[in-house]
Amino acid sequence: MQYEKAEHDISSDEALRLKKLDNFEILNTPAESAFDQISQLAADIFDLPFAGICFQGNGYSFVKSEVGGAALEIIQDLNRARLAFFASVPIVSPDGYHLGMIYVADTKSKPIEERHLKMLQHLAGMVVEKLESRMAIRRTLRAYDDRLHVLVHDLKNPMTTITLQSELLGRIPGIDDKTSLISGKINAQSKKMIDNLNGILSAARKEATSFKPQKDKIDLRQVLERVKKESALSLERKNQTVLIDIQEPVEVFADRDKIAMVFSQLIDNAIKFSPTGNEIFITHQITDNEVTISIKDNGVGLTQNDLEKVFLKFAKLSSVSTNGENSYGLGLITANALVEIHKGKLWAESNGKDLGATFYVTLPIK
Image 1 (cartoon, one colour):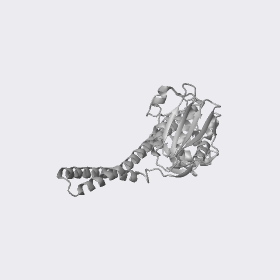
Image 2 (cartoon, rainbow, N blue to C red; image 1 turned 120 degrees about the vertical axis):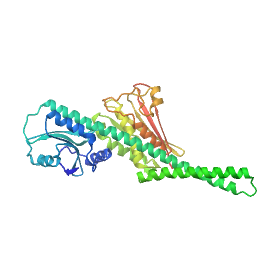
Image 3 (cartoon, rainbow, N blue to C red; image 1 turned 90 degrees about the horizontal axis):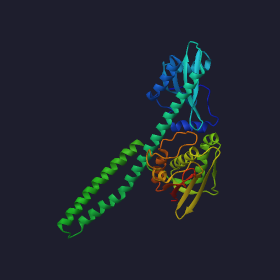
Image 4 (cartoon, helix red, strand yellow; image 1 turned 30 degrees about the horizontal axis):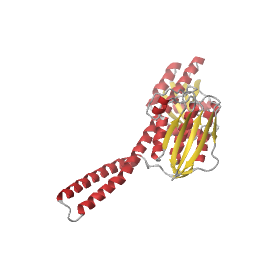
């Protein structure tokens, strides 16, 4: 549900804040029962009739859950200071962006205790946890779907060749009946396979405008600078610095948004698994028709066993984030799938525990 905005908890960098909200896919969407339990907990803790969760963006408040069915009146009364009781805490993303609020309200006055507000903060954290985990799962599923569809598309070329060659073989003058029979069977089966592949691709196109990477000439240095800017709050919170040692444009043909997602995940990992005050170094190397970007940190590092499992789904690694940040075990899986879509390669190197790690992304230039 969409209502006029309550004027508070708005980040100074509105563009990045709105992008964060857009990534979570919660604006301009209906209310969700998935958040109702959290709202109900808030109402029960305060023993109040009204509670809700809303997100603020583009001049509106988007109510995702409410108890008491009076979200519009509550938001209007909040602006006019007519409520006898209102308490809220901001919903803040892990990197510090204020996304919205969780609130409780009543038309009757009552005292508020500090422990209640702390419990409300915990509930706000549960909202963020739900958003983060949902986003990680969605990104991974989409990346794997895209990878599958690109693979299916690539399989069509050899299957089409087999179909044509078998048909030509069957038309050669003077071939014996056995050869003609075999070529006919090959032709029929290959056509059936092509029909099946087309069916998969047709379904994919109905789900999205295009599953294939929207390749264009992009400058990887600019993409990295953009990701660095979007990570500014996370870096500031841990007093970390990203140093991009790339002096000239590094151009490749790739999907800008997908490659940005890859670098975002790798830089986010470096931030999570590096101590406060650390530096993250980004360099590049060009060889033949490939460019390799390296992202190096001096964090908790990876053991040899970790390196063997780092791109496996839900793999248990020995590394632990330095500030207790959440890690869902899906980010590197998503990044790897997106790199593979581009016919590239993603791998990691580390000298061991507490000796940092370096992740490498190799992409074809053309």
